[in-house]
Amino acid sequence: MFVLCRRRIALAGALASVLAAPAPAHAAEPLRVVATFSILGDLVRQVGGERVAVQTLVGPGADAHVFQPAPTHARQVGQAQLVVSNGLGYEGWMPRLLQSTGYKGPQVVATQGIKPIKGDKDHGHDHDHGHADPHAWQSVPNAIVYVKNIGDGLCAADAAGCAAYRAGAARTTDELKKLDADIRTAWAPIPLPERKVITSHAAYAYYGQAYDVRFLSPQGVSTESEASAKGVAQLVRQIRRDGIRALFIENVSDPRLIQQIARETGLKPAGRLFSDSLTLAGGGAPTYVDMMRANTQALVRAVAGRP
Ligand code: ZN
Image (cartoon, rainbow, N blue to C red; front, side, top):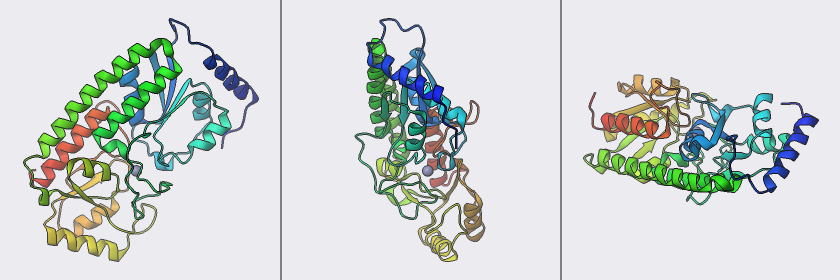
C-alpha cells in the first residue's frame, strides 16, 4: 500500500477548510474531481464540462475489481475537491484509500437513490457486493440518477458553477433519454422469449431488467477458479434447449469459459460487450453513450441471428 505522507494530510486538511469557505465567484482553476472508474469519469465530464478537471482512478480498459491503488492514486484523491464513486460495494478499496489520504471533502455516491438489484451469489467474479449488484449503470434510467447525483455534488463543491452544472446535467439527461428510447426501439422487433444472452460476467442484470432481456452466466464459476463441469454442462443444455444464439465475451473478463461453451455448443461468440469499463478513443466505447449503443447493437444483432 501507499505510504502516508504528513504533507499530504496537511494539504488535504487545508483543502477541506478551503471547501468550507464560500467558493469564489469566478473560479479560474477547474474543479479537481476524482472519479473511481472510467464510466463515472465520462458522466462527470459530460455534466461538468470545462469547469471540471476529471481524473479517473481505474482508467479505460482496466478492471475495478482487481484494482490496487498506487501512491499516484492517493495523491489524486488527496488533491481532489470532489470524489465520485459508484457505491453498492463496487469499490471495495475506496474506504481505505479515502482514509489513508485524509480526504474530507464532498463525495458523491452515484447510485444513491437507485433501486438495487440483489447480487447474484454466483456472480462471475469477486466484487465485495454486500447484497446488491453494483452494475447499476447498465440501465440508462439509472444513469440519469447518476447524472442528478453528480450535478448535486458539483453544486455542493463549487456553488459558483451551479447554474452551469444544472445546465450540463439537463443536457446530459436529455441525451440519455434519447439513448434509452433508442435502446427500446432497437429491441422492439425481438419477441420476448428470444431475448436470451449468455455472458461470462454477470454484469447485465440492470440492463436486463430495464429492457426485458434475460442474461445467463455460467453458474458457480468465478474468473479466479476453474469452471465447474456441472455448471458448464447445465448451461450447454439450456443453450440447446432454448435455442440461444447470443454468446458474448466482455472487455474486463477472462474469455476462456465462454470459449469452452462455444466449443461445446458449436456457437460462435457474437463478439465483445463492454461491461465495467470504457475504451480509449477509437476502441468502440470511449463514452457511456457509445458503450450502451455498441452493446445494444451487438446484442440485438446476435439475438436476431444476424451476422
Ligand atoms: Zn463487474
